[in-house]
Image (cartoon, rainbow, N blue to C red; front, top):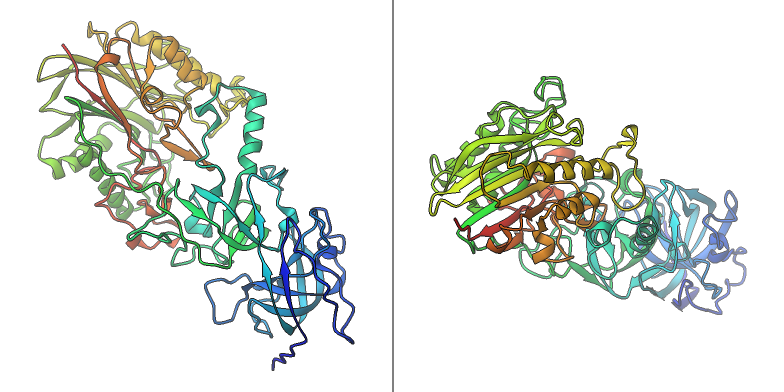
Length: 621
């Protein structure tokens, strides 16, 4: 039985990091109360941990379980009390009252809570023993403008914006924030937001530098906050925010914006105690996104020949059952699809993309390194849509030792392969470490229309995701991440190798495409520029070029570099942003019990985790 005794009504106006001022006093005969700001204190943890307290405040966020609203369940609610006008302390706190709370509160209730002060994974909470509704009131949200004045390091050693003085309070981000990461939208219901537009990887715009990179990381962290779905459970359906836009048919993308988002701020990980440990906004008003970055249509062909570079995100013809049966030696881990259904979905998406591109030559990256099954399956899939025998492939067999390789497809009605292909690996140049980088494939093509020649070299250099410290190439903290010197040495070897005309074409027109795993100003790209090549995306698109997103920062990992003689024949360069900006819930994978209906093989969106780069040429003989 609930007793609703209206003893007072309050209106509190938030100001800075505190909740405003009020002359409200506990009613006569009420238990002695502790101010919420005293519970929070001015440090990262409460000075009253383990103590029993009674607090009073207005409910500013109803996230109770077991009530009429099952769309926001955190097993508790946020309350906010009177302010001490101290910007270093918070006036709000989260009250944990379990999965079956005895008192059903709503936002605007004035409540008295008795319980024990706890620190739950870095968040100050009150573990409630009793909750009494004693009146009603309202709180104005505290305005926050990012970037934050300071950053802090979470327990994982990651820099985040320091918003401790707002923990538990009702806040409003009084600016437009940009969607910068969607990786965990499906699993944890989270959207990473950032101030001042899209966030770019440091080396996309800057030369490697330890001091400048450190400043960049600080600045990036100060601009970020997470918008959470307000649920404890992971993998919730429907997925909040996926289609929460103002336009019909909206699907959220990195680069979209949201303004004036309001809610209670808490410090936690994602649903279920996993995910990034940071400050998360639990919305108290339904957010709606502006489609600033709408899905792009297929680029119009503007040259006589179209060349495409596309990272396929591990296209394997062998189903990944967990057995180590892939790679040239048959003893490597498989990747890609985990079931025939996933394989069909993955192939369908890739075929849609390649059909829409209508390219004359396609360099593919992250293809299963088998004799011919992966390439044969890919070409047969495309030809089944665009017409029999439209595309062929350069039949290289296995290349190198890795589980993946690069490959070349071509439209046999517009170009033909000219002479044998060539491979760059460690046997050709020991600077090219093929135990880390995938060997480069080069092939010369002849245009059937005018007999012009073009040599295309497809590369996939060492990734940033594993260490090269054992080879004396650690992460220097200069923005290149792991293996920067390894990639730079391989790129230098590539430039020197191509200068020897490895395919014996006798023609200087060379296009390097693929995924060197290096951003625009990293040493690997600089080495190729020093060899006489022009980075086409940087030249045509500029510093805003990108093809991949990692940890909330967009950057150009996929490149096309033209030799000096080829450069005047380049008509257009396009990064087709069909994948990097999309949430991965749209891809072929069926992980985490994903709803299969969210996938549409007839659209190109989220066909990979990389965007294809397109080069249109008017090739001259």
